[in-house]
Amino acid sequence: MHFANINDVNLHYQVIGAPEGKPTIVFANSLGTDFRIWRDVIVRLVGDYSIITYDKRGHGLSDLGDSQTMTDHVEDLAGLMDHLGIQSAIICGVSVGGLIAQGLYATRPDLVGALILCNTGMKIGTDELWNMRIEMVETKGIAEIADGVLARWFTKGYREDNTADVAGYANMLTRTPAKGYTGTSAAIRDTDFTEQAAEIKVPTICIAGDQDGATPPELVKAMAKTIPNAFYEEIKDCGHIPSIECGQYLTDVMTAFMSKLTRE
Image 1: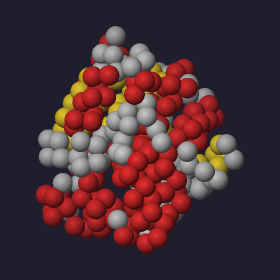
Image 2: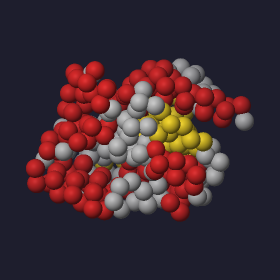
Image 3: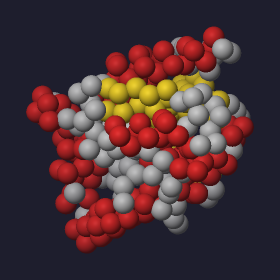
Image 4: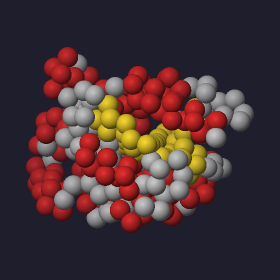
């Protein structure tokens, strides 16, 4: 395990090296998860890419920090990349991780060579939705919302066929610090990158799950239309976290996109 003190917060991260000259991919996670959600993608990329994963503040083994604003999350990622001496990496973010990736490009474009935006949008949800969820977690705990969250994370078929796995991911969700969850929920509520998305100039692919109840395809497609020259890919029979439910297909989509970068 690796830890670094970034912006007075201890961040838990992992580096998997690759031969010199290979591109670097940085993965940013969704709300209520840690970097283990990328395992089925990472194992298929090892050796061809240098890989960095990390737990954002308030999640996994990272510190909670005094706040969890979008600025905090973006500056944490920038600080971690500076700490590791990385520039112009491929940033792959899912859900709030995709917002963090967009924020990183808006503030530190030197760190971003390309964007893979999975199951995310320029703005996610409504103030009413997030305020209701925050209030529920504050008064009754994350367990109270877990079933609804898991129904958005995974399709009905996946949940029925993988009950042990879903129970494990429920543990990951419910063991997230409540303040980390609510603080990051507020960060999502307060973020709108519509104007910034129109200014993105690096190669970008926007990926949706056709059964994603959190960031539906229409939301992801609107983002792809706003970002100049962005690609759009929709994964069939997939919910909100494709790295878990459709790891092989997501890796194939990422690899096809990234192979174009090395040829250009």
